[in-house]
Length: 180
Image (cartoon, rainbow, N blue to C red):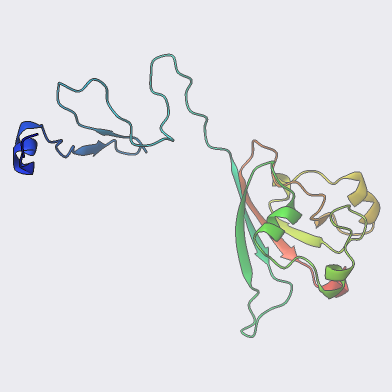
């Protein structure tokens, strides 16, 4: 076999050229610009919706509930600490949102002696300051346990955040242990 220089091989083979990419404004789609010799466009994102005729429209975003959790005790400056979280409307219990966001839910006694979400101990008691209409109605367990408590008090383990259709903001006051 005759010795061929690498320069000779590369001069015979066509080299691929860089393809400029144009992105659609406001979309996660991007398509490379191709020459007329290209057979089909290439999509850059696996999450790109199918834009072919007759394809179903992408699902609208699920409604979100914004949550503000006000601490049970004021800080050194006299203001109450506020933690924020968000949840998809109708998907989670208030207790789960707090635990997932590592927000203090139980006082010392509740950390040791809670029912794990059964609605029978009352250690996850909170007061709803604003946005009560964005939460599920009181359950039978709450009505039994909280019959002499204000309507704004809820058990986080029994309270569903939203109803899959509503969105808005809920302000929750974490109660000190002595109030429970």
